[in-house]
Amino acid sequence: MRGTPRCGKNRGPRLARLPIERPADFQYAYCFATSDFPPCAAALGPAEWRTLVKKKVRAIQYGVGPIGASILKLMREKEAIEIIGAIDSDPAKIGKDVGEVVGASDAPWGIMVSGDAAGILEQSADVVMHTTSS
Image (cartoon, rainbow, N blue to C red; front, side, top):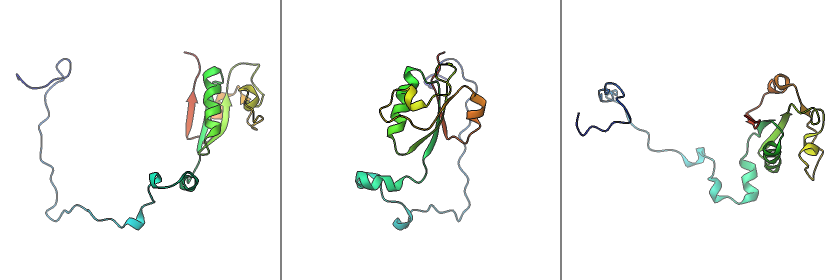
């Protein structure tokens, strides 16, 4: 066992390295039609990048304190992100427009801060930004 690299303590028996079995007629596909792939975003200008976004990311902000407010402002700047909800337990924020709560210059945003986490999280969101205190 000397010279055999190990991570930390004994991790158990080493697995045998078995060859990968493939059918006799197996072939790798090396050729692809270039027309099947979208153009590389790096080769496009900023105006053309917008057309590559097929679906906006639907986001919910959970916690609208100082960190959550900064994240909300950043998300608002991105065309690829749609803010669909905001959750906070502070009674002073509940029922107010999230744009006004975060002090955004383009407020109101038309999204109200809710204290009902279950109700907001039932929405079809792609991501939840969780920024509550621990």
